[in-house]
Amino acid sequence: MQINENVTVGNFPAKPRRGSARKRTFVSSLATLALASAAALGISPGVAYAGDATIYTGDSGPGGKLIFQANGDNAWVCDIKADSNIVYGWASYTAANGKKEYALMHDADGANGNCAQLPTSDMKEGSNVLLEVCLRANLDSPTKYCNTRTATA
Image (cartoon, rainbow, N blue to C red; front, side):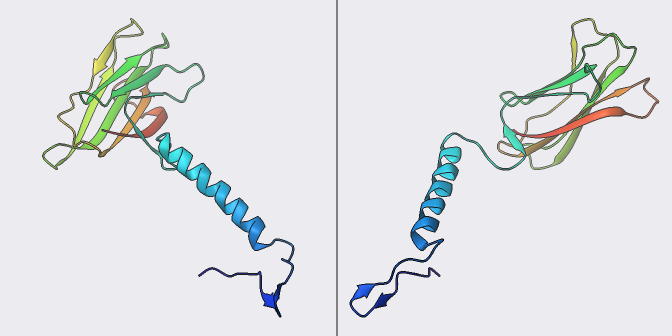
């Protein structure tokens, strides 16, 4: 429901009050323009990111990263710091067949410039993919310095 503050008194429109409808219309127009521009640029207020994504472990001078590539539904975990930690990553997603699936992998051979690929299957296009990367002291230790991100397949 829209309220018009320009009320007619006799044959003359009354003066708009402070904070008038005209001012609110201008501010509303700016907000609409900002949202339309963001939509045109593909910017969303949500937390999902379309396409490729890279997330790093939360330690200072990150020790690991997880790379997600939407085109081809690939993901890798990479040890990028010689700190004696193992980089552990996982992805939770909906497969093309509609089933919920998880992929786990770790890169435990040190920061030697290679990455370990997560064993992902074909993902349902447009579905959310939850990604997480962490460090571990060894395969039996708890995870630490974890970061998560949601991307779109």
